[in-house]
Length: 386
Length: 133
Image (cartoon, each protein chain N blue to C red):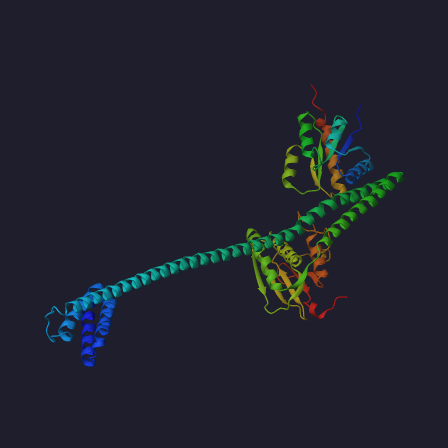
């Protein structure tokens, strides 16, 4: 194939020179054919073209014409021509090789560059993925920390009630005992007025002490300024329900939610609101702990309050509330539980009222009790701060 | 000659301590109050005490520890525990150690007075005397 190129190009050169027949053009036309042969064919075809051209020169263009006799008179001419064609051929072939090598080198280099680029790209992609992974991890950590802070704040209410209970219990015990002692001193024959007076003084002192405790606690609560923001009541309740599910399971109660879509957002402190809901749920679960023979069901519902606000209802199938207890239910330290502090509902009511709502209890139709609270819809964007 | 029974009150809370002491006195009994278990022990009143009204949680020696020490020393003083914490485990432990009663604060006057009378009846059976060699 490569040699075919040599034969073809020399043949074309011959035809061209025979047709044009200007002697001066013979050498350049054949040189061109040889250069092309060597260029496209390499050293071998170049040399073949040089040989063919030399033979053609002798045969067609040197006297005697049309004889391949290499007459001695023509030898210098033929020799110089042949030498020139060989030189041209080898130069062209060498040039071609150099170009090829150069191109190969360039191609190799380019391939290498591409390879390196691909490597870099891959490394970059890996790095990006790692950065994204790290960002996700950091986000998850932030989220977990927020959850923990949230949970801690929710639990603080329980700890606070325990502390209040103990702090107030001591002076309360003393007040009751002193009052009884006082009655006895007065009932004596004759009454011991000095002792009675001292007992009453102690009652005053201990009553003040209890009041101081309440003041301290209130100051403490004031420190945690409620952070009100517009929130979706259903979202807040879902979180609490997720939190309380394990407690419900532990007490063999089913805890379900029936949340109405499309309720207006309420302006509330998320944590405080969730404390209230959690408190009502835990109360409901405890109210059902002695129930046997029927299912223990706690249902949390949200709906419109009939005007523009929302209403939340926590309905249990427990033992219910005796009519005479309904009124005292929200008093501080009033409890029907063996180990209750009697603070949960009292604080819950304060929280709801501080949000502009109402919290109350009613007997459920059938068994158990229902606690309801209302919250006004967020109207903050209509209000101007005074 | 029968000695007038003394009821000792041990509670670190001054309000409760003074109130209980006054109530016991108002029933016509003799009472002494101590601010700690250590104060009670160092006053050497164990011998004369016919009934001990004892707080559970106190800084320093706890009520349960005082009960153990008195038992170990051979005293059989009837003890009425009073506690601000409703802890069933501690209650069971106290009763196991021989306590006459275990009352949660705030307790009713009747519960305390009844417990004291029960304790005195118990100690008059000879239970409160220290075992003598």
